[in-house]
Amino acid sequence: MRTSAELGTEFDRYLLAVERLAQAGVDAAAQSLQRISQDWYELILGEVGDPTVAQAIMLIGEGIYAHAGRPAWWHDSDFDARLAQLLELVPKLKKLGDFNQ
Figure 1 (cartoon, rainbow, N blue to C red):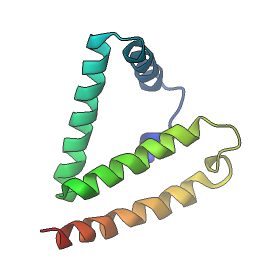
Figure 2 (spheres, rainbow, N blue to C red; figure 1 turned 60 degrees about the vertical axis):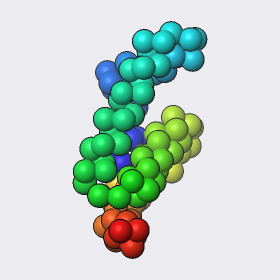
Figure 3 (cartoon, rainbow, N blue to C red; figure 1 turned 60 degrees about the horizontal axis):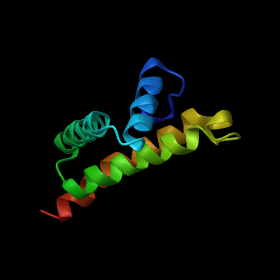
Figure 4 (cartoon, helix red, strand yellow; figure 1 turned 90 degrees about the vertical axis):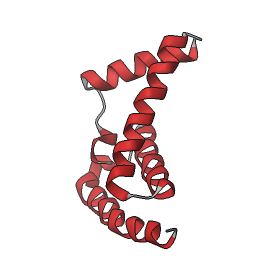
């Protein structure tokens, strides 16, 4: 989640370009995005051990990324504190995954 609000980096520009290509119907770009997403999901799943929790964490990160590009975003004033609060949720989400097993 920590890197979800990093905009303007080389990786961010690359990702945006690949997303635009995928939206334009370039199959190789769409496949690349699918691989990136699957690899990211598997890393998170390896950490949390539950598919539903891993998906929730991915969606939280994607939401942070989507909102980070908007003007007057909450991270402008207090991002570090708010991110710390979100990161504190990860162990709690892991515990929720334990209930599914």
